[in-house]
Image (tube, rainbow, N blue to C red; front, side, top):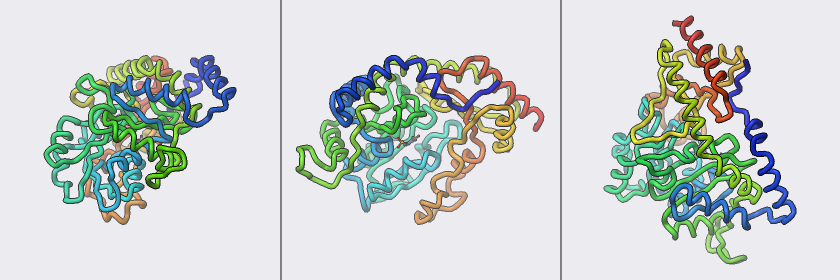
Length: 370
Ligand SMILES: *Cc1c(COP(=O)(O)O)cnc(C)c1O
């Protein structure tokens, strides 16, 4: 049995009629940038996330950067984020001219450790940027409490958490602003690159709209230097089709996760990433921790089981951040997770037999190496 880490073709086959029809409409109108599908998606996604405003942009990285810039964060400022995340989280901070300041994560969840934030705050700190990694929402209650007492803003990196709930409220509406990615492999994925900002603040939404369109709100009048990061109409149309299915797909992911948890409950030497408090997770990834991770990954691969590593090098040890002068040992939990995490296949279209096969193979491999 072959179990790919991710196969988007099965999903396309299941929605092909609707996607092809939506695309044909755009091809015949020839309105490829902005326009009705983008506005329709923005309205639908704002409602889905239960926020007042959504602004579609070109990628998740652009969403983060433009949201930070909308809050006037830039050169001379610091933004506190985690080292255990995808590079784009910190890259977006750097793109504004600000400096990312890392804190470590909690070993159980891989999410920002709030008790470490206070020590990282300086005169220059403007914002805290927690990442809702793997489809679970970070400890927003604790983080916003710290932010309030220091007059900092909180931006959610929601790139892996479309539809995730915390205290029954959706990702993207829990703080000052949310940044989503619709990269094809995300829980809500476009047929190319796309992203969105969510916020309840009308002024911030207006500023992101201006920044995504060359710093312009009125054609040929430019208030500032922005970017070309408008959302593409084809992507908006595809996302509208897929948004209707997102809850059902997330439910499938949760049921796969529950099956993995029961089948792997006694697996020797393996640990789960735990469900964090107040969360209804959406399992963008199903991550376990194993010793000798690379060898186990190789063994699974030789049995045609695809896996991923999210992520192998913590950001404070990336060459791009050499100038920040961090060292090995600065964030021990992030470094440990980077050496132990293994992501198992979890997309909605998997069938129970495939999950059971992965669980059996992984258990056998770990039993032999115990
Ligand atoms: C995917 C991702 C991003 C970047 O999104 P893009 O659309 O690829 O630019 C940012 N943060 C996290 C945590 C991600 O997983």
